[in-house]
Image (cartoon, rainbow, N blue to C red; front, side, top):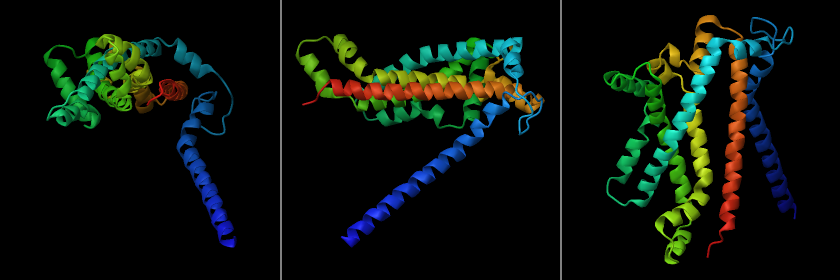
Length: 277
């Protein structure tokens, strides 16, 4: 009994130490981000703690400035177009790779996800020279194409993962009962991997919305995005406005994480809805 009690005590202590370590690690990672939030409401023109006063002036300047308004429109427009193109294209590629059986499948998969493994500066240089030859530098179309190239690998990986967890017996059962391939895909496959589609679309949107290197190479003054203006605000003028923009982007990031978590829970419920035999 004494030995068993000592073992339980050691397990409880180890569990408590692990929890403390995880909390400290989480605080270490998140604290620098959370510091931005109170600073964004500062009335001072400098970054200083403690905050001398509270004001919404930097948010007001951000929302009323023509420069930032154009950057907001460009960021959302490019991100939405990128998501609308990259998600279906990546889904088609993932479906094709998942169902195909040929010798060089892994080579093609590696080629398709190469943009997320190659340093972004190399990808940006390659895209710049390619788009320059066809006259798409300093254009919205060229920027969207570049972001689609970056987003497709994430879509392929996420949807491939969703397809790998798909119960094939349900598809075979529907086909055996006389359902046409499109009916099987629409009624069985899509509902089961729908959370994967949502997650892939979210990652495609984030990839575009958060990109700055490609924008610096490809975009002109009329296609400047929020990330590019943030970079300029840090490098050139160090305006407190960048803190308000950063706070908004952090909030958006938390909302995106919430969407991904809801999609994960929906996926679990959806899979429990179809009992396997």
